Length: 88
View 1 (tube, helix red, strand yellow):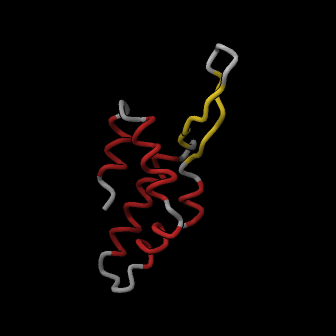
View 2 (cartoon, rainbow, N blue to C red):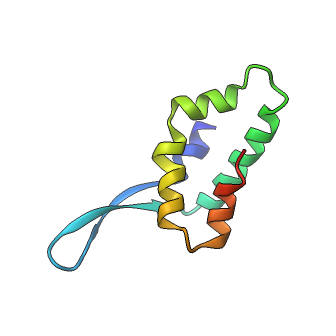
């Protein structure tokens, strides 16, 4: 599961064209598939009393580090934003 989360994407430095640069979240090549995998993990976690998947995602701060930045950067990409929005 950690490998799936690692492959979601990350921040990269991009040039703004005026000599300045900024950090931008870039989804990984398999980012959409990773989101679908996370949804499967979370669905299985629903029946687990210990909620291992939910606890792990919380301790890794996946919502703050990946999911929110994905929603911000890819708000106009319906496929990606729906994949994030339907995670439970």
